[in-house]
Length: 261
Length: 361
Image (cartoon, rainbow over all chains, first blue to last red):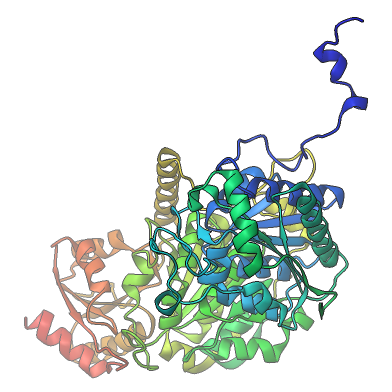
């Protein structure tokens, strides 16, 4: 049997995976093991599969994903810290036929931007919000976030989050689900292939809702790891996430077609 | 059709936004400028021209809605009064950094803090020296009449898109609240989507296949690139200073004593010029129309035309006077007069200040 060469392998019929054209070739700035890269990729794959790339404007926040526009190969606007839902509102109101989404972390969406988040959701803005919750401020070096769990260590809660003095973690996803202006609210993860498939399905549904003019925000939370911020290996961080984050932030749909599940 | 109407300054500003072909107004109520959004909501421009009017949850949200819509190439406006304008400063810095066009108005009230709802000109430093963080400038137009409240919206949008810069209409509680005759300019149709895409290739309207994507951002983590961006901004501000400096000379031909003022203080100083002339004092008024760019050279040139002294008249403890001092560069005497904290000075007080601080000083 003749030796198989690389050229024999690189044939269309052998192709099992291609990177979406909607991700640029720039190396991701995220730490190895972080969930952001997967969340970016499935978001862009959804836009490609739905043929929305020429009609979509994304809004990048402040935080680890501040440079999302470097990786997402579509028209993008960077927003001030917490203000992405207001920026998206501005775009969507003047270009109602465009697809508009924000991609935000927990500090951005659930602390400094709580007001913009709640009011964009309550006004039933027809946008998609993708919310990455890793329970920490990654970009600034691992400080306590609004979603940091009780007892969880961070650089500003070095002995663990002390609820009596530091307050409770905020389940903002459950909160926005209560508002009449949200149409679809779900919580997903991207640490395992099965979860990636489910998360991608949820993101697809979110964009379809907007395309079909369903009134209200489609809100997709992705509970993700921050291995460097949590000071763990990527594998350990995923185990820790399953054991600690998921009981507090349970995965699954919270609101579908405007009805609480 | 142009139309003659009796209107409040705030109403004229709102009507002018519709007539200027604005695509959107995002605002939040605050005295003494709430009539702007009230007028727009009552006038229903969404039915008249398709213009969007939205009451935001905060001043911060409103300016960020402006950022988003402006980044997508639309003609967009907001307005507020002093405490609300302070809240908007972060967004304005981002708009300046990302080089987006917009028009916004500050109907200034007395401060600091919650201050008072009465008129003031104490936001001059904030308006002309940056306001938010970073090395940036914005074009500042100072209306002195209800007529100019309307006209400067149209002019402001032209300047904003010509230079991709925020344009501030710096008004005050007097101009915003008083009623005057206003000749409203002919309506300009809103731009079509196709026109926007063709005219503003930088705007985020969706990346077409095979074309470069558009990114609206004020961020560059590479300091060398950020310095380059800053140099480009400074060059733009210099061009603006060369071409867009606006002012008005009133009774200055033979004037020895010059009032320097803008906005409602200019109206009061104009009356003080009349009172002075009646007493045989050769007084004149240098009315600033643009506060940035500041007409430094033109003020300095007054020294060579016989000016013996300048009185900066402003409803503040002395802010614009610093720019007058820098302009005059010691070629003549400069003093400041102004009431503040919401008090409006009288023409008699202004003339008396000229007599005591400049002529007799």
